[in-house]
Image: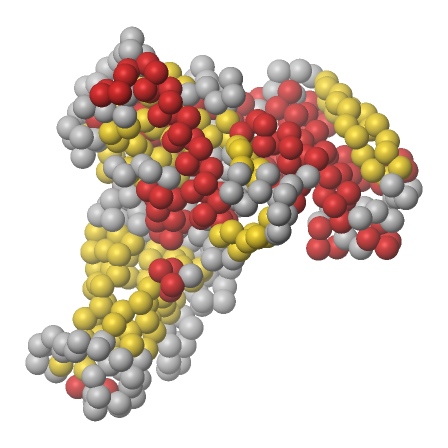
Length: 527
């Protein structure tokens, strides 16, 4: 019998937890750090390393690796890497994630084998967490990356649910009946989930969040302020966005510009984190001025200054939290929230707790001992228990799933098939018609609508409606009459939020039309 592990695969940091020989939850230390930067650095196409060491090397050679790649894991785009040695190459973000996770798995396997021996020290089960508001393709690609990294028996769990499991486990009352709100402010995303614990089962009631708002958003605000100060002090005109960079105007190379931006980003991140404990902070870093002049830059910020810069973003997270509570009361008959649990590294920012306490007033807010490891610990508990009970948690859909009209007066209008907050797993069917006789192939596109953040989104071109995947049906039987054929599409949202699509052609009597030449191809499988 092997061991179970939980992986909080974060945008900025990754944490791995397992139960040690003493029966206590413990984190993997990778290069002596239990908080592992989600960074990868390539010495060559075949040789690479991750974590703190990769983060330091990437500051010197930003084009030789990647960070912040997790939010792009659903994209089919490729990222160009210029390693220290050899020719440049391209990798899809899912492949970069797989290489990163491979090193994580290798590290935890060494640790487990050393502690438990060859028989018990292998990995038997793993749970990897994902933001609640990730779409089905993003969740599926994270799962695929984990499996490609030699985690054969792996499940995907929502980060807030894992946090709730870890918190309730720490309370030691498995039979408690409580409604828990998890405020999960991570590096790349913000999620809020209301979870009902009853009889040891965690049931998601409703969710909210913003997949584009996280700790990195706050770092970016501070980084831009630092760059503005440098431009003012030295009469420079460096743009904040790389797309606006012009080597001639800035009088430095693109490589040096990227070094500068990496230095600024790291300084901003350090200031953000240190101001959680200090009232004022200063930091030094190297900066390349126009003409290639190296300058040692010192920047100072107070907590009050920082809070002024970020207050609108903190307010947005609390607004979303309040909306989620109201939705749970109106639509799910939740009378009260028993506990509010903070998770994610960005929850360490004092303004978060202050703003929540002010808006929620009488509610007690639980600030756990180590919010940065809470989700990983919950994932490890989940991994240990799911073999005995696959019903440890029940999840809901976070968005509406459906298609858009392809013809008529409603052309391009979103048509929901699976509503938001539907318990998972769930299955819905939709019947389509062929657009013309003798059709040889046709495509069905699948969309998700973020109804909670974009309630007025109606058409495919609107913000809040995103094309997620499509399925192409090719080599249809000849001489099909459009009026005599029905295309029945079955959408199945799995328990972990990933989506399966099945297509059948039926004649007017409902009999399945079969053909050996006909094939079905998912766009995501072809990329």
